[in-house]
Length: 405
Image (spheres, rainbow, N blue to C red):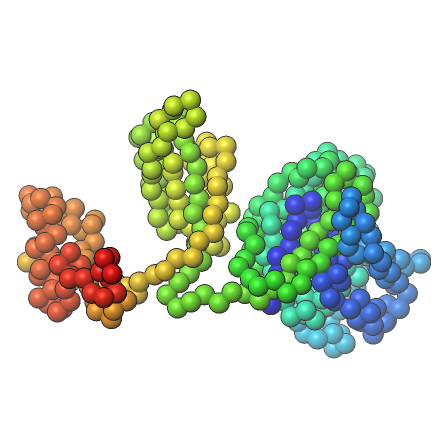
């Protein structure tokens, strides 16, 4: 199973766990696990909660006279054989990420981290509960939306801190974030640590057949639903010869042709699968260009940010796409004009074709003083004699390729 976590109003440990409970996790499993670890003093209560018209699960975790546990104590506690290894390893990853961030922020050794954010019962219950729930629901891949962090300040045991709190900011390094639509702290250090431990990526919802969903509700009134929403499903099978990509588009009327060309070249160098421009007419009759980028699914957030940085655009449209690929490889072949690279493709009807790489055609035509078309024809004819593979431009149509059929 795969899952998508909507963090558009932030994420915290209780909202994440509440969403998993609403999606089918039995919270009695968490209570039993805490008892098995000797933590029967921690009480976890779950109940239906409503947040601005949206109903989900909320949590209240209490532990009378809770001790201020050090990270090393928590690590020893979780390293027992009581827990299954995936649950134990996941919980330890999240708690260690949180402890390391707090240690870095406060300038102490990680084993000496003992303050409220680490030792509190709710943090321990949230982390262990999420690890258990992901295992029980058989969620093998978790993708999250860009994370709303909030704005302003938040009161903590260490006083008033800016949002995101320093430990949260440290945990979210490399993660796409947005301010969100509400003030205050929307993402907590525990929520950020859980993402660091369990999220496999950030961006759009992955293609899936939805099987269940869940909502976790926070306690604070934001003026909007204070929730984290989880969608769980089965991944859609990718047919042979296909892969998942996205098209990123932006309309530009403020760049010169030279600047636009430079931006396109830089996006290609940054890992875009393809980049192209389309002449368009925008509002008020302005001549402009639409710059388009083809990106691998996993690269969409990074390339969208790069697109904004390179062009100064105020927005990028993202359209998921399914790409049909032709099996091909690149090989070097010696010709009468010198060695050149060729794409050799296997077409749907089973035949193979070749085409000279344009960069090599340009180089050889310049070296030989030939027109590029003439150089390409000589290169491809020589390669066809060597390999027995027909050049693409000379290939007759077949039943699979004739566009009139």
